[in-house]
Length: 530
Image (cartoon, rainbow, N blue to C red; front, side):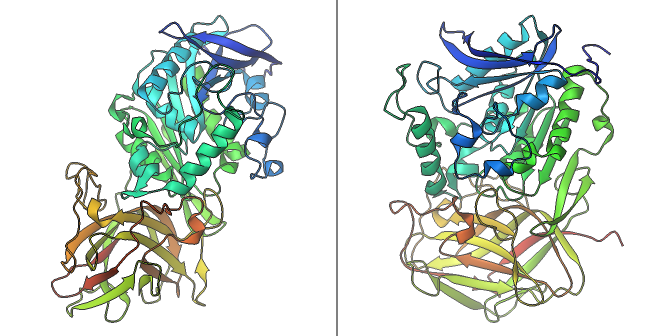
């Protein structure tokens, strides 16, 4: 087949440090190139981002247990592929320091159209090299995945495919302001880490300024035009990626204009699935197909692969043909404040539940189902419709869905980073309740964030809250609990919303249920095949 390499041959690794890649405006960026020592023309895997290529994985994030990685070596780099595994199999690996990062001169262009154009130039440069077969893939985790959406929307002619592995798309909704509430904890921590590595003593030797104070700045609020992405896409999300990437992986898959696209949602932490042998083989089947025309069989598989979760390390893989799953029974559980129950029957009697958002108790309103009488699966997006009033002019609503076993123990699930988390999470600042009618659906509200609608104290208003997608199976005897709270679940660390100047922390919030107040939790029930 055209451009195909022998799968029986392994190549020696050649390392070329600090190669300059010219850009369209006359400037340049600096890259390391890992390629086969032997002659030939090879497919390329490329990343461009703000994490200096010269800093080893172990040193970039000391909080991560490097020794737990399934693969290690002298060329390991945070959230990018290991050339010691890929290059012997016939791949060129290129890591580019974005402008103002590491050894690349210039001003930082973080998550901007300008950075995507730089990336475009790098893709085209790599494709023109004598060792290239003219095909380039972009594959990496997190920031590198976020950049893959952006460069693909620029349509460089020699970009062959992208693998955004846990990569947000809409940095306002996905990462910066969840439901309008500022996600400061992670953004500030991320910024400190980038600044410490790239600018330990002020501006870099290249003359670049220190990093901007946040990952999320106003330039990053521009969402790439996903309809312009036409190359094949493997979007790999993580059920535990609530608060940063999961929403983007789903939206990117749905909105990409690609003829061939795949969605995988795995379970686990943020790093290990990418470097696991299972993860690498998934990646290789995809890039082998689009960089070497190798028939790996992926085009004959359903496009969606989901980890269906029962517990922390208890999940099974399942293929699906569409998202949301076509056989979903959208099931409303109605809130009853008089009993604290979630019921399948509409509630006729009006009642209220009130909590304090100033830090005093109670700071939560809770509603629970009866124990399930049979195994029940919920997989997909979730919507909560509330009718609320407040004693102040705004409210921050933190929505938490928990699974409890028959003994009353909460079953929690692997998080992207840090402690385990509840079954599902959502957020909304009441003044951001205006819906984007063009993007919202019956099962997933999308807020426009373009009109601040303050509350009139005491007035009841309806709000619809987007709860991020989940997959959870409840066994017989298990219960599901909905909490509407004044704060994050602690397990969401570091994706917390604690900025003193941003948070709404005064007054009482009242949830009105029953009668004229139609409040319900819309769950994606997947019927049993039996």
